Image (tube, rainbow, N blue to C red):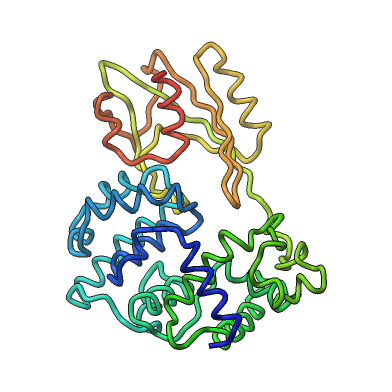
Length: 337
């Protein structure tokens, strides 16, 4: 172990957060935590992790649950393909592996919804495989320690970072060291305005020496943001509300929503909305990493002239039983207050 490795582990023992998935080597629990925490803050993901562990204490419980219930329990986390992949993979492990989680990086990587980062995390945390885990925090930490100017969001550069990370890995305790690297990046070597003056690694950090901390890691410009424009029809009669299950292959697939119409641009949406100004309306903007969504909900009082063959009437009081995306829950929350 080098002195630098020792400093990282020493810092981790003193400063690490007490998170429940760190107190177990159960690969099911670790897998669950890693999927929940993808593109999700720890404080937001923690209650979902606790709920899933209580609701589905074993992989067998998750596998036999209905997709509807899993999506409902996932509601509010977003990126619902994670929940669908979670369910699919739980069933695969039960059917093909008799409920025993694969124990090597290569085997784990074959499972649906699990990429290199998650496979390495499970393999090292639970089975002590000597493989580095690279998340955004680790990319940033390595970029700064070694003053690497390669863009981290380019595939060929990620291969180079993997080589560096695996050479740097403490082979005697790979799981603990990986967690230390991730935690150091999250709490100490922050993306913006890190407190370098109090950093125990500053004497080793080439970016600190070269005054390039603010420029690391290097990232190429993000992909173009897709803008989408929706109208949702809120139709109610006799204590029932009209819902449809979204079958389109997008981020909200298999979630429930009011009948909807999508428009190619804002002008066409606004022109259409203007024809229904006599009805109550609410407009929401929803910002995702690669999509900006504008949605207007129109509550129709006389539903006789409307027909949506892909929708069904359900009792209004049971609407909360159906898994819905965040736009739907935002509308319902505001309407009910």
